Length: 133
Image (cartoon, rainbow, N blue to C red; front, side):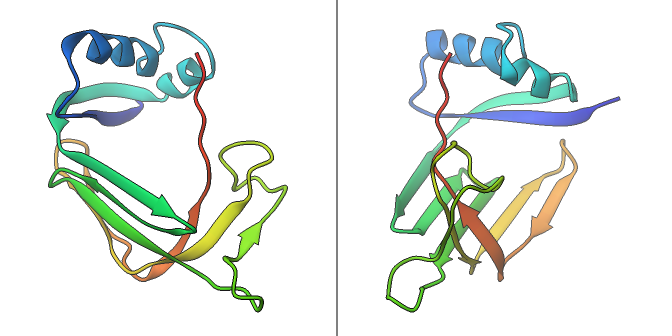
């Protein structure tokens, strides 16, 4: 049982950080991530690839090699600022607002994991994420 998963690391990652990240995300070091790791039945691969991410005021782009990529454009509020939700479950970090928008492009495909999705044109949410070990 459990999900099939693949792990992608930036192609500039050396062996020592790769080992540490594998220990964290496979649950060997305990903590909250260990609870998520219990849902994974099989890790089908660990690969290094070019990873890029940029985000500014709710507009951004994520690319993970040829496997996944997406963009986000923010919804604009009446005052010209980015639309946000505060004090919500959608926020990745307590106290951080969730930025609302749409994804003009989102595609992820990995046959080994069983993912083949195109969610282009759907709503999108962005938020801060902080991980501390």
